[in-house]
Image (cartoon, rainbow, N blue to C red):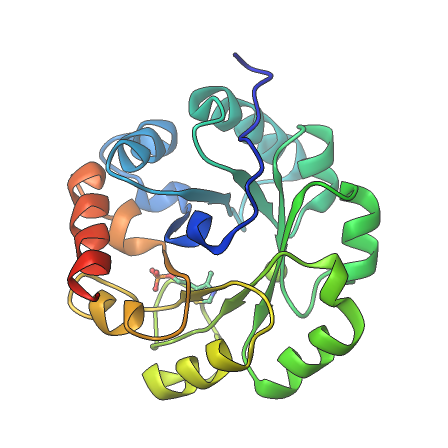
Length: 221
Ligand code: TZP
Ligand code: MG
């Protein structure tokens, strides 16, 4: 139903294959169908991210996506914590330049997912020291350079990523430039999962794209 939320099991396994949406990249099937196909292919978590839409458009998209996903996986929104609350999503993901972790947790309440982007060891240590009990996971990246995020921070590379993942006291998901050809190396780090935009959204076959990425998790064991 339109009112179902994902059962909140806040373990790292929910982060295994994390889809971040880009509406413009979903050329063939559109946003909703692309996300549904990707979940059919094994995506475990969805983040609605749209830097172009205004708040009203984003709220409408959040409601439509929530109804389509129907609680199969957690659905969170990027940056717009108030919209996550208004649309009764499963949580939000924020970056270093957004509202504070404390504010975001206050808006969302204790049970929602809240993730924070991390690019350096000092950011990780600050989050550990000040916000550990307010956060559920860290997004670590970018791992590799990517055109999807203009002006992104310096890429970590696999070794830099693994250092952060090993130091993390919370589950972690890696993001940035992850595709079928490098997913296995990322799964071989201490991260709990991978997050992708273009590897799924820009694919004509999002279900197959998700299946192929997930296969790299098993091949990495
Ligand atoms: N944050 C860090 S890199 C990135 C975001 C949102 C974009 C990742 O996109 P892609 O297409 O998977 O490289
Ligand atoms: Mg942000």
